[in-house]
Amino acid sequence: KNNVIVPFDDAGQQSLEFLTTKNDATLFALASHNKKRPNNLVMGRTFDRRILDMVEIGILQYRSVNDFPGLPKKRLGSKPLLQFVGDLWVSDVNLKRLQNLLVDFYRGDPVDSLVLSGLDHVMVFTAAETSVGGQEAYPIIHQRTYYMKLKKDPQGGKAPVPYLTPSGPDMDFKIRRTQFASPDLWKMVMKQPAGTKTKKKKNRTTNVFGETIGRLHLEKQDIDKRQGKKSKALRLADKLEKEEEVAAIEDELGREEQETKNEFKQTYGFEA
Image (tube, rainbow, N blue to C red; front, top):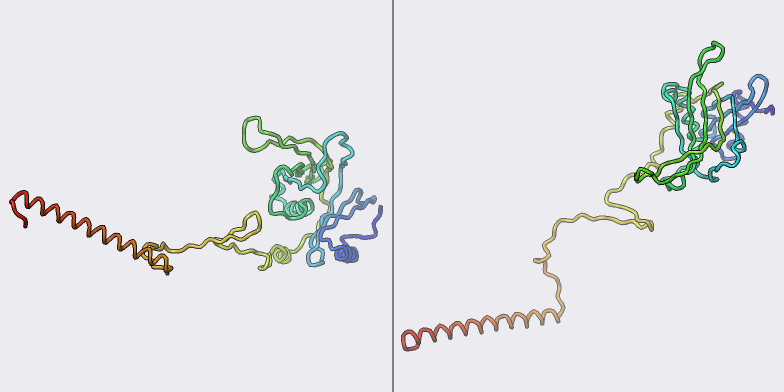
């Protein structure tokens, strides 16, 4: 279908900015097909309601999910594992930006943690250079999607082993045109606002119920020498205990004195 929106023209970009703002969307994809650019797909994203970057790719080969009948498919809404294979993802500037764009497209909503059993598919993007008819070599990206089943490691390891089954969609494509943000704009986009950065608070944790637990560090206290306020009953008990202790000491001294007198009388025949 010939689309009236031409993304790489000023009028087309204004239309895209209007539609993305109206629908509160930061990512967009526009498919078109004509004689000059058959099987064309434009992927892009916006920042501050303006076009940030766009990549136009030409689809060379495509296989949909329906081309894999009878095979297991991923669950709706599940997050994929993304794997980028090839040195071109690091050495080629356009592919580095495309990689960042593809991650934004397929990652879904950001989450803090994932359940291992919820991972059910992996997407592999392989970049390789090719040349047709003696022309200059250009990179081709092979996108493959696999259903992933985690099973127990037969070697006895703790981590489960993934078993992959082709499930689609798969496609091969090449880059036709690009429009990336300037270095200054890209630096501003990557900067995180100060309010979104959460400072790590020492000695404070949150349990599974959402309750905040704090830890206090105090100097060692000598509890034995601390004098607290005692009730009347405790004061009477202390007084009686002291009186009994004094009486027991006096009784013990009296017995020792009497024994000493008896020994002296037996030895010398008279009392001291």
